[in-house]
Amino acid sequence: MHGRARRNVLILALCQGLYLSAASVQAALSGLVGATLAPTALLATVPYSLITLTTASTTIPASLLMARFGRRAGFVTGALLGGTGGAISTFAIFHQSFIGFCLGNALMGCFQAVAQYYRFAAADAAEPSLRSRAVAWVLAGGVTAAVLGPSVADVSKDLFAPVSFAGAYLAISVLAGLSILLLAFLAIPVPAASETRRGGRPLGEIARQPAFIAALANGVLGYATMTFVMTATPLAAVACGHDSGDAIGIIRWHLVGMFAPSFVTGSLIARWGIVRVLLAGAGLLLACVLVLLSGTALWQFWVALTLLGVGWNFMYVGGTSLLTTTYRPEERAKVQATNEFLTFGVVAFASFSSGGVFGLAGWQAVNYAVLPLLLTAASATLWYATVSRSAPAPATHPRSTS
Image (cartoon, rainbow, N blue to C red; front, side, top):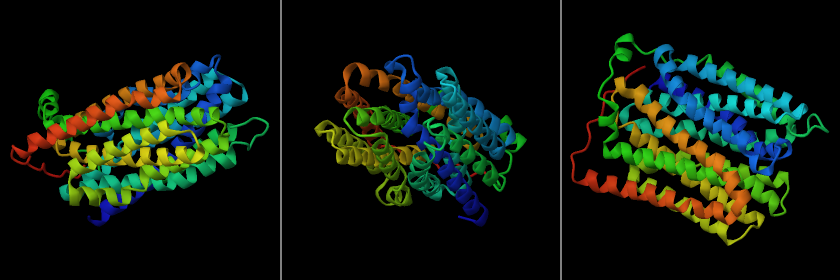
């Protein structure tokens, strides 16, 4: 990987760490804050769910914005909206406004929508043989979040005592501001006008490729499984007698599982192939469910949420890497936008329904509900493997510098 690409990957990895540190604060605390502000317990996870709903709604505009004005402009805009969301959430907590807290969380979804393109920006600038590693290295920035995010939440949640959690949301604004400073050094050229005018193949033709279907199934269903279980976990942990500090610790181990494997996931794909890594990811998510169904001791939450993170990592990195083989440079914006829209549309539904399923049917129902998703993702992977064995290897599309 040449010098400029290495620098861009480093910057994107650091920005990934800052964004995910902010996101981990949300993951650990939004359900708890929502429970104190919502008119009914069934609405406790609505603010957090609005993050994924807004993400789904803004992924397509974000991709088109970056295709027109460049990656850096889009990334800075997303971080600015995220910082604004943190400030509004802080204000809402002080004034006990559930609507205001929902609005602040929704703006964080804009930050998330744009941050999801960090990995694509790194992959598109790398040589085809290094794309899996570029994606994994950017996601490895999340290891910072595993340490920084929960620590920020724990230290800042009582900053404005007796008003709990307000300081943690102000810290989100600070993290977003640091991202903006780093992005000033990102060197990815604005796409050439000739490239943005070429539409490439119809989206339907691209979407019929077995590789696209398998990539989408793993990305969407793996993310939905992770979100569905993770969103309800802090509520379940507290309901089982653990405190908010324990819930933050559980999320810390989850983040370690999500991003620490990124240092080796790209190498595992290069050595063992995408299919084996994707199937291993689905197997690890199944193991997470089995551990959670076996009991509610603190160590079981730690082990299960770590497995949840590792399984998600394998499916997410593998799915992203596979997706990059399905489009040409001029098709990049619409394919990436479609993938992100479908991913976070389903994830939004998973997040919204998680709190309701937990409230109405209990913790075990949350875990049983994800089993069909894992089966579907594994089936799509096996189908792709079968088809690809009997067909010529797809041509590698030329790398674009945009």
